[in-house]
Amino acid sequence: MKITFVHLGRENLGIEYLSASLKRAGHKVFLAHDPGLFSREDNILYVPFLEKFFSRKKAVLNEVEKSNPDIVAFSVYTSTYPWALDVAGEVKKKIGAKIVFGGIHATLVPETVIQNDVVDYVVEGEGEGALLDLVEALSSKKESLNIPNVWTRKNGTVVHTPIRPLIADLDSLPLPDKALFEDGINHSDDYMIMTSRGCRFGCHYCCESYLRALYGKGYFRRRSVSSVIQELTEMKQKYNFKRVMFFDSVFFNDRKWLEALLKEYQRKISVPFRCQGHVAYADAEIIEMMKEAGCYGIDFGVQTFNEEIRKKILNRFETNEEIKKAFKNCDQAGLRYNVDLIFSLPLMKEDDYLFALEFVEGCRYLNRIKCFNLCYYPKLKITQKAKELGLISESDMAAFEKGAGGDFFHTDGIGDPAEKRMKDSFRKLYKVYPLLPGFFRRWMLGDKRYLCFHWLPKPMVVLAQLIIGILHRDLRFYTYLSYYWGQLMKRYKYRYHDNKTYQKQ
Image (cartoon, rainbow, N blue to C red; front, side, top):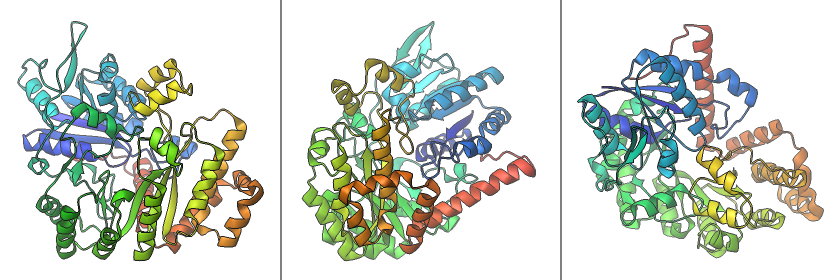
């Protein structure tokens, strides 16, 4: 059969694994892709008027139609769900393909997604086996009502099945189909790889906590060192990549495995890499080991420096002392690190935003303070907690199920003007903070002078971040430059030259 995936946003490893599994079984796979340049899915630059100009929605619809698929599949986040429904509706009007929705939003609320007339099937949870079974059933025109993980409708009644067991052996999966995104993503700049699935933590704001509860014991799994090195070796030969991004929730939580991997990585791959980490595992020995192996950056998801909020609201139990120690270990090793902070957490006050600046003062190798908005996703414990505190209503929760989860990167819908100015000031200040001299930082913290940053023009904030990237020799900064330049050239070519669509088979 012919399956066309439709995707809004950047590279999606989940779709690549699904495609690889389908192709291994002999099916043909296509991709209709809108990178969402300058949209709210763009975590770097959100520019509404440019979003409209660079939108590929019409091109995506044309690509789907030209691929003449039997099945059109969407892997959706809460934020992309409305867009996907809109595209699926247009596809339904033009062609008779079956529509399948999967991804994290479909897993959180499959009972809501399947109620849409344009959706024929919903794949809940891990999709490789379920989607392949569904495709095989439709190909042979067999009954498709009893496939584990799959929801559908029959005679107006919703039919669903139990969750199938997890894929215990990740090494058994084919390597991700990187070719699918080749025209939209330059894998030679920064190769994205996952060495594990799941997470050992249960943070209440994160969808991983829902999946962990759904699957129970054994949710966290890790690939073998040989499997990871095999993928990197093959893809290095194919793409000659300059850098690697390990996209695991927490990369270095297994010392023995990490030691073995880094030894082989240095010997066979030997390019700079970055990863996401947790302060509880960032002891001096591991940080030094990572630095020596070529790590140039770690993202630490601290979220807030208020220990009480971190523990009671986020279900995070690391202490500020542990965070200080992790930062100090990175400083001593000369390893750059980013700090992720979430705005608008329940019970969060102005002093908490101010305390974050005081906490990171003196962190010599702090690269960036990354700012995110709290987004309420369906069925997560933080969403229920916010309802109990009166921050959101029952109607809000119903809206979240329909895709009104907020904007993770750019706006958070604050109604109170004074609060909006305060948070906007801290957001801008955090982004330029590593560039400010010490004496100015100290002066600015007095008499609430930091609130003046509300007036700092956004172009100056962007310029400051560019300067920080250059001064810190942040290799990810160069990846972003290459990405935007490549996307702009593709849009220029599409609009003004040959008007060809791009797909990968």
